[in-house]
Length: 188
View 1 (spheres, rainbow, N blue to C red):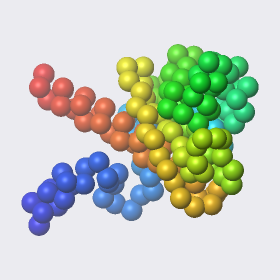
View 2 (cartoon, rainbow, N blue to C red; view 1 turned 60 degrees about the vertical axis):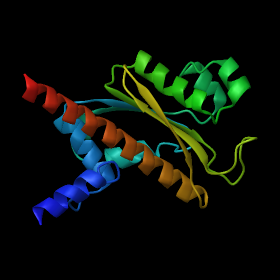
View 3 (cartoon, rainbow, N blue to C red; view 1 turned 180 degrees about the horizontal axis):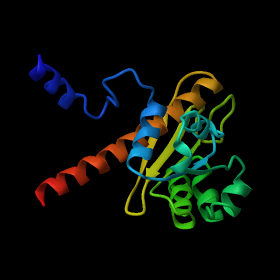
View 4 (cartoon, rainbow, N blue to C red; view 1 turned 120 degrees about the vertical axis):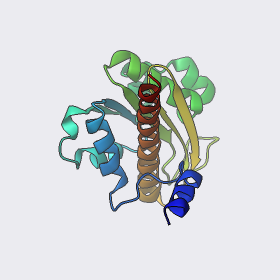
C-alpha cells in the first residue's frame, strides 16, 4: 500500500496540498508560521478575500504583514507604483500589471513572499478581457511567477476561486522552497 501511495503522491505532487483533513488556507498559514516566513498581498479582484482566509488562522499574525486592496487604478499607481504606461498599454487586467504589483510590493515591503491579483470578477469586464479572466502573481525577491486564469461562475465564485488559487500557488511556492532547503541540508 505504501508504494501505491508514494506513486500517487509523486504523480499528483503539483495538484495536492495535503493528505489530511486541513483547509488550504490553514495549511498555507501553517507553512508560513512553521517556516518563519512572511507574506504581503496586493489584491484587486479578490478584494481582500485572500487576507480574510489567512487571518482566520490563529498565529498567522507573525507571518501575514499586510494586504493592500488596490481595486482602483489610481491606487495601483500611487501605492504599488504600477506605471501608467503599463496600465495604458496592457490594462489593469494583465500579466504586466500583476507582475508590477507583486514586484513593487516586494521592493517596498520586508516580505519573503508577495501575492498579487488582478482580474475581472464580473458582471462586466475591462475590455478586451472577458469576465473571469484573472492574473495571479506569486513570488519572492528572486522570482515572480504569473498564473493566467479563467474562472467560470458568478462574481462571488470568481473571487473565491481566485483567492483559493492564489493561496494554492503560494502554498506550493513555500513548500517547494522548504523541500529545496531540506535537500540542500541533506547534501551538506
